[in-house]
View (cartoon, helix red, strand yellow):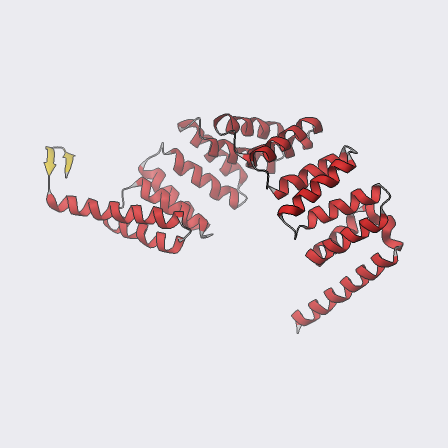
Length: 299
């Protein structure tokens, strides 16, 4: 193995063994992380760092593994170590930004993503995550620009098309939002939440039969789907199909009773159904079950 010192190039068999050991464990760590075996991957990275604490790549990979384990503070420290050793390391800035975003530290996250893009301007991941942070900051126009940059570099990123549509709806650009969600579904036809959002958007546009079709498509990919059932209930009611609306509400309550009770309190579109005997019985039974559950948990 050759390495350069102030005295020139030196060869040493012992150093070859050390580097080979580190490289082996690093590769094992990446492979295990790719399989979702994060705890085992972490032990491999730590083995490498026992031998060589100066590798920014290992510190960075370790940070992403800790992020997957939900150990955000440790992940931030790992990314910090990588950046200390390589200040222009875009992937480490990206990882640190993701951690700040997960901790709802939006300003710090945005700064990290901007730094990552300074060193790697075409990284679609940084543009996409930057857009997600801008959405939480309600800076929708800038978020669309970020998603567009992400899509320039990875047009098959269906999540970027989806979130782009959400931002366009926030700006009342419904037709363009629908086009964006349709592209997301062209890329990933089984994306149930995109079908849900398409149904919601079509409902707002008073295209109820198409909205109903979208909600049914969503249910074909995820049956336990409260949003689709609720969307169907609203569409059927607005078409005067009371019994079908009640069927959908019953299906929604079967998925998640507590969320439905909360949603019922705020959904003015369905309040006229309150006098329907089927709905009265459903709400009463749900309230009783919730009270029993709360009583059991207190005991």
